[in-house]
Image (tube, rainbow, N blue to C red; front, side):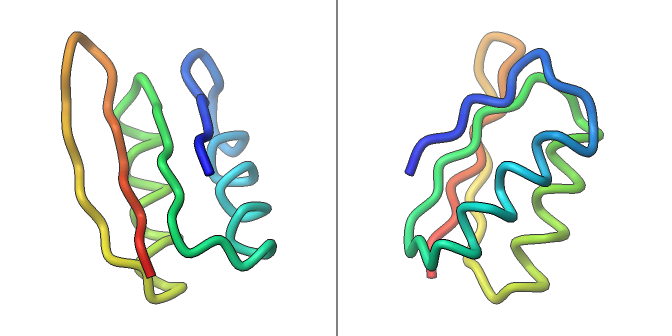
Length: 67
């Protein structure tokens, strides 16, 4: 599942990610554009047992979550 949360402030990126987790998605790709959202999504994913991979490019942060 792909989530584009660019331009959204917290807690919206976290809530979108939480909805994907509740849908039992085994792969979630979250795109954010600020460090606060990145850190909060990472914290949520870690608490839910997801593996996390971060890539930054052109002011955007891609967070790959796999379970």
